[in-house]
Length: 407
Image (cartoon, rainbow, N blue to C red; front, side, top):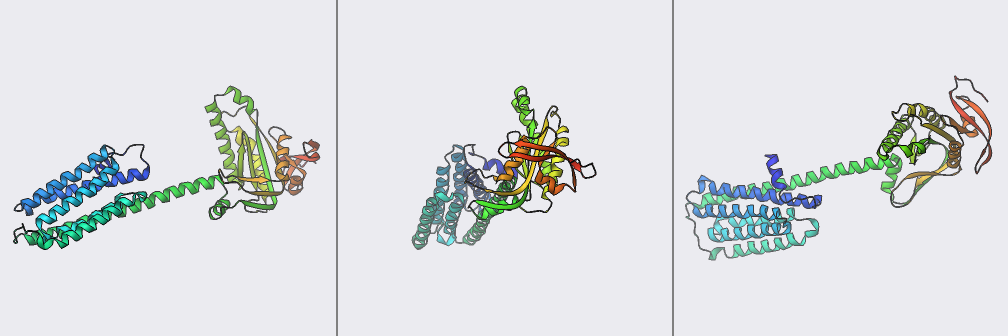
């Protein structure tokens, strides 16, 4: 049954329709089909065998409602909704006039504006408003003319017609109430799913704390951290590899490498900042300060060469790593394509440590060495001329302090 109504709802729905338009077309089809079945049920009911007028009205209404589906199939969606309301209202007025007011058929007119407000989109509010006004006028007219209309029903059959009309009105209102209930809950479920997707995407782009701040404050975000550690990792020989490997294969390989780096970032509690071509940037101590930010970045840096070597297809590639610690400014700027970024001399120095380093090794500044000299082992590199910085004392990070410290 569910698949049947899904197929009925899909009549006239084409790829060019937006989600909201498609939903309203489906609702129009499904409620019209419900009403057609209900009208046919009335016409076929044994209770009305002695009342040919009721049988005829039920058959006519069944045909009128099914024509709604044909209009939607022809992609005349607005015409289908207008016809749905207009034909239904006209048929009800005719029935009420023919059967007389005492049959309570006129009460079904109440359903017409209810259906109209369900089946039109928000920007189409003028149509359900117009239909509601016409329905109200028709209901008032049928009530005022009640005494002047001839009674065509056999008085002995009137109680059966009244009871049936009351039950049918109740059933119709239940149907439209169910439609409203399902429509509301489906919309809420869809919104919840889409909101979760959006928030998951935002969390993938920005740190969780920054994402929350950005959602509550549209202004730019900028924070100063007196202590943070920045890491840069660049793939050596990647440019040469790019010249001989097909683009799709190259992108897949780079994706595998950076996914591996991402896992290490999560494992060591770092914050991935961004990728720049074939370079990877991460940091610790921000946006949430932590006391072991230098050690955390050091452990991540030492794990990168092995992670790269374990990736199929990465043969011939090496990673050159640099890190530095110090104050940074971090934040989100601009209005589109938000990115959490870092600024300051610490970032520049970390970048220089990477570019002046050696493949497969972790090149660090003297500030990192001073922070970790009792915890990790280092190899002194001596004074190195660093572009933009002059002569700096730098070191290679070797591993945990169980290894000999060479200084």
